[in-house]
Image (cartoon, helix red, strand yellow):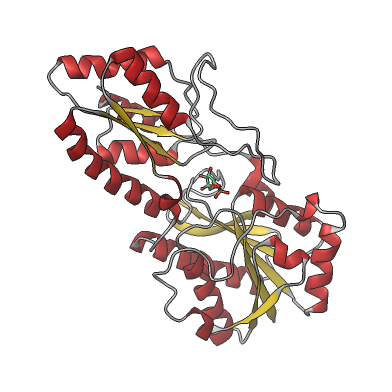
Length: 342
Ligand code: F6P
């Protein structure tokens, strides 16, 4: 078979590991020819196709990002986009497409599969907010990067008696913030699922400092919002999927804490550092398992499905399920973090 792959949406450590596994099993076990569509759906729309092989992935297992490039191009927002994708697949004699992406990329994959295209999905996002799979690769790496940063911030915060507000990614769900907050010993964790009361946050910090601890770490997800909408957090800019570009909650929160408590406060925005660099061993293994399962699904003709992790096993789920519902932080896990607030 001639099998194409693409990586769409925000990049994520482990993407190369998925593709390496597809190429290895596809070529050596199934005798496939593998090609890549560059920059996500852009390559599919613009017929930007490159040959790939086992050789193309030499040395990429520990490498972050994606050697194919990524974009947030949405064919359904482009005049004639879906038809152009179909033309690219037909013109290049592509029998099946493996789309590796998050909510948006897989949403497009689901629509194309419903229109009869031979598509298999692989879930990807550092945010870990896809409900159809228990975990996505890249999440473990992102959490580890946040925890490394928080560990370092503890010592400088303590030396200067400061409050440190650490803004992490997570626009709709606070998985990274909650995990990093628990593992990093945060004073408070603020997530999109729970609008926060700034006065309560300040009270927790004040109580801690009155007990003789003069440093605090506040972990805030980029999508966290205050209860009464008193602290605006959004810009007007949106991407092709209509997502507002976030950023700024960390700074605003730091200013509000300093004004209300009088404690010197600094904001640290971890931003894209969380998505860069080498994947953890856990993410390399999960990504490899997903890649193997995806090429197996292609050869079983299981189109319109996505590979997913459930109860430790890799299973196939309908692509529509992948994007149907956002996976939010389990309240029980947030309660674990809350025990350590203050
Ligand atoms: O979806 C992954 C993600 O890293 C989100 O956590 C974040 O809000 C967004 O992508 C950032 O997107 P961009 O790289 O386009 O600025």
